Every structure is written in structure tokens, then in C-alpha cells.
Figure (tube, rainbow, N blue to C red):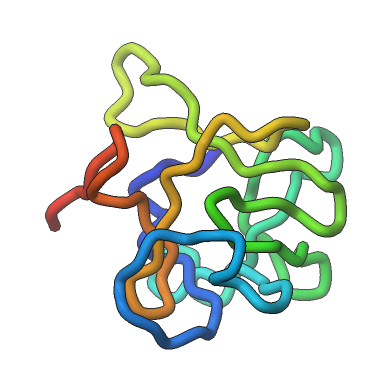
Length: 125
């Protein structure tokens, strides 16, 4: 699994002000792509052997997503969710699920982030 710390590295090609994602924010499906090393030009998708496990992989197997207050795959209809803290880990795991338990997504330019108003807050780098 990749961590919530990698989310700021995902971009989708829309230029806008930092705003919470709403159902009207996204007008078309997007691929979510890594824009910094070590996941530069890799795309968000489900692990083929475990659809609930998000991974970064080649564009040829990339999934398309509806971006709103939730992030939902058009390929599988699964939602991208943030999990609970795991002891000894410095990140929160991500997973795909049949229902959405995360509505913390927002945009900063063309980058998907967790909103400052969410319980996840914003990480400072």
C-alpha cells in the first residue's frame, strides 16, 4: 500500500484554486498520476490480484476516477478511502472499498490533497 504522504504527489490536469472537492468540481473522469520521484509517471490503479489494494502502475493499466467529495474508480466503482493508523507506521494506509468513508479530498492546483478542514488536516513539508 502507499501512504497518505504520497497523495500530494498525485495530479490530474485541472488548474484551479485550493477548494474542497464537490460533486460539481469534476466534470470528467481523470487518471491520477504521480508527478515526483519515486512514482513519477505511474498511475493509480487496483492491484490486479486484490482490487481493494491501491498501487501505482503503468498508464496502460491505469484506472479513471470521478473526483468529488469522494474519489471513485470508473473501472471498478470502488472508492478510495483513508484507513486507520497502523502501530509503528508513520502513514495512513489507503484502500479501495465498495462504500466511501473518506470525504476529505480537496484540490490544491492540480493536486489531490486532504483538506485542511478535514480530520486529516494538511501535512507541512
